[in-house]
Amino acid sequence: ASDVYKRQNQYCSYIHEWDAVYEEYAKSVGLSYTGLIVLYEIYEIENCTQKKLGEYCFIPKQTVNSAIRKLEQEGYLTLSNGKGHSKHILLTESGHTLLKETIFPIVEAENEAFTELSFEECNLLLKLHSKYTTALREKFSKL
Image (cartoon, rainbow, N blue to C red; front, side, top):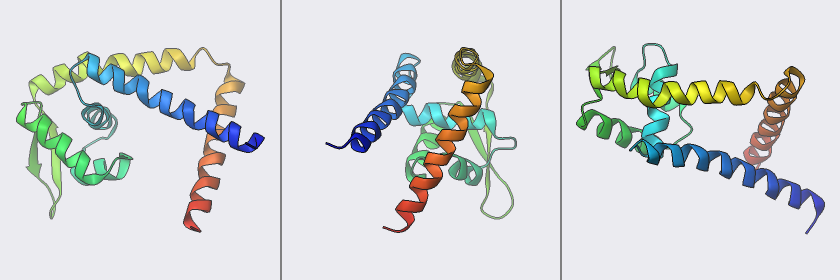
C-alpha cells in the first residue's frame, strides 16, 4: 500500500477512535451516542429548535429525531411550536440535571485536554483539520 493510503488510513483510525471515546462515555452515563450528541448540541445552540439541531448535528436527520423523541419520552425535554413547522426544544428540570451531570463534564474534559496542546499546536490542529475536510468535501462533490 502507498504511503498516502497508510497515512489516510491512520487518520481515519484516529477519527474512529475519537468517536469511540464519546460513544463509550455515552454508554457509561446511560445514553446512546446520538442522545449524547443531541444533548451536547442543545447545550451549545441558543434557542435550540429541531431544525437548528439538524443543521448542527452531522448525524442523519431521522436518527436525530429518534433521539429527540426518546429524550422527550424519558422526560428530559419537551417540544413547543415555534414559527411555521419549527419546534423549540426545551429542557425539563430533569433535562437540566442530566445536562449538568453528562455534558458539563465533557466540556470540562475537552477544555482540559486542549490545554495539553500548546497554542501553536492548537492552531495547527484546527488549521490542518479544516484544510483536510475542505479538500475532502471538494473531492466528494466531484464523485
